[in-house]
Length: 140
Image: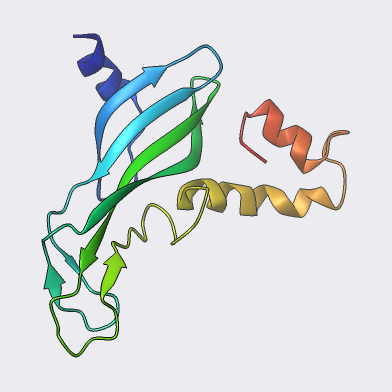
């Protein structure tokens, strides 16, 4: 019951992800997520692949919820390319709405930080952008 209520109260996740588990802690909220789609396109040749080669975990800082930082623990997957002539033997699925390859922050967190960054050059109400991020609280 508690998990169902938490899922309904959480802010909308980036497209293409679904919640597996939520771990609320006093200092942060960790959300375990996985991609929704069972098959993905090779980024090089665009041939679909649905057989998973391997998995690994990515940790992404995301927008805060209820005044606590949020960490997305994403179960990322690698797929073999089915096209024999493609130079990509295996590839990691792309989640452009969620995060760029190798990124440590979600796309929506990066977008918010871009709006705050211009204030770094001059104080805003006596605070720098880093202080503003702590007040919101947004990871800086």
